[in-house]
Amino acid sequence: MLAFEQNYKIHLPAYYFKFLLKHNGGSPKPCLFTKNTDLGIIVINWLNGLLEDENGLVWNIEIFDGRIPKRFLTIGDDSGGNQICLDVSLNSTNGAVYFWNHEEEYEFDNENEILNNMYFLANSFESLITSLVTDEKL
Image (cartoon, rainbow, N blue to C red; front, side, top):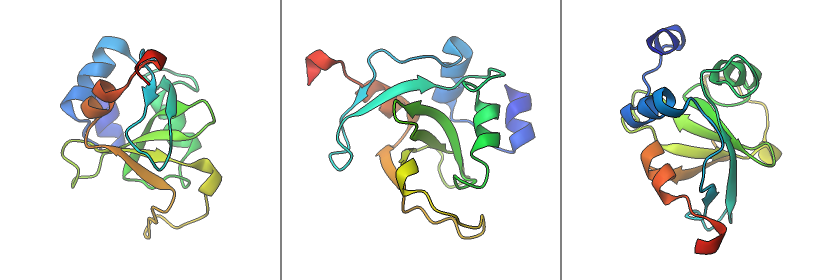
């Protein structure tokens, strides 16, 4: 895990780091996020782990390089291919979580990271996880 952080020059928030050590990704239960009324209900399909396939953080970093601003780490997705992203910039000590809408994707250069298709979800990964609900709670 530390090698991953050093290789990509990022620092993972403590709660997310512990999540990876314990679960190494997977499908969250419960999986519904309802706190952003502009987006409606988000079904979190998968949370990436330190795997060597399309469910892994490294694979997603490579696939979304140049598509998602560098300050974000793609940590999961919804059932429609949109990404759940963790802000790993130095300014985000808790690792705020955002929703990247692929239908609003456009080209940008990494020096001018335009965030028009990035939607704030939670102040931290912990806040995101603790706010997930089941169908019965809707």
